[in-house]
Image (cartoon, rainbow, N blue to C red; front, top):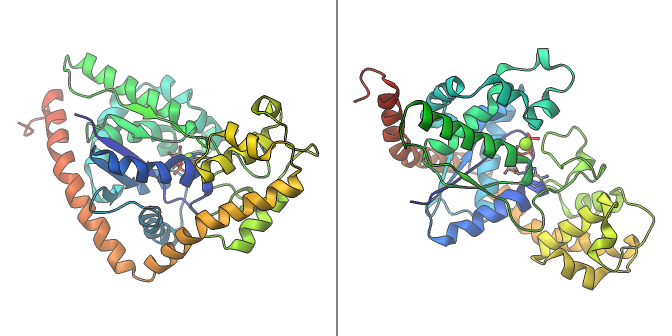
Length: 334
Ligand code: ATP
Ligand code: MG
């Protein structure tokens, strides 16, 4: 039966790409009637060093970001990964199923490890096996993510299929990525060929969900563009990644198709388009950042939400882990 799972790392400031590519769509999926689980993946965050106090704060702020974006802890299971030990336990099994070669081909690994792979953590390399465990420990079937996670989803399917094959068991479903909407890959405001990221060292590269109206307006005003006005049609955006990005962001925030944005905005200069985009962004994001700030005033309440979510998540994960252990021949699992 269908089940939705997705996660976000508490690795810094939530940014506009997280909202349009993930959070906003999680909130939409919540009313579909399918059970939904959403996870703060703190075990993923520590694949690169996090200051402990910052990690704690980022985890609570992420939970606030989920709720402020419309996720209802009664309708969805909202929880923190390390509070459900079955994720790490199944990840170990998957470390033994996945192949080194598969991991080495992941573009996220190559991007994040950079030229100094010898010095990257083993956890960063194994990241996709933990991600497969996050999904499959719930037998989740649908995973709403941004475009950048498509390759990891394919790897999760490969792990599920290899496990089923190696143990002659039809046990894990092959999870499907759900990548839809106008803004599945929001790009950096400084470089139209790089995705917007929480962990980008340049704060000007992204719009944070906690940015105030002035910061949002300034970042959009300073966003890199070319000197031409917007073209009349979508095709005219070919070869203009920065212009395309701003159009996609506008479409994502307005709930329009990019083609409709071109109908409204085609021919306008950036001097006209950017203020319109800034106004729209402030209009959509200000209520979210206000609600996040309000929720962050009561961290104990956030912790209660997460504890309750972890309890509910464990009720699903524990029997699936036990069955997995039984299939692979662990004594005591029967
Ligand atoms: P980090 O830089 O620490 O990797 P991140 O911004 O990439 O942070 P993640 O926690 O890795 O965020 O990803 C959370 C979700 O947000 C995933 O579903 C991912 O696909 C989505 N996402 C991340 N960046 C973007 C983006 N620029 N556009 C659309 N979706 C995005
Ligand atoms: Mg990321």
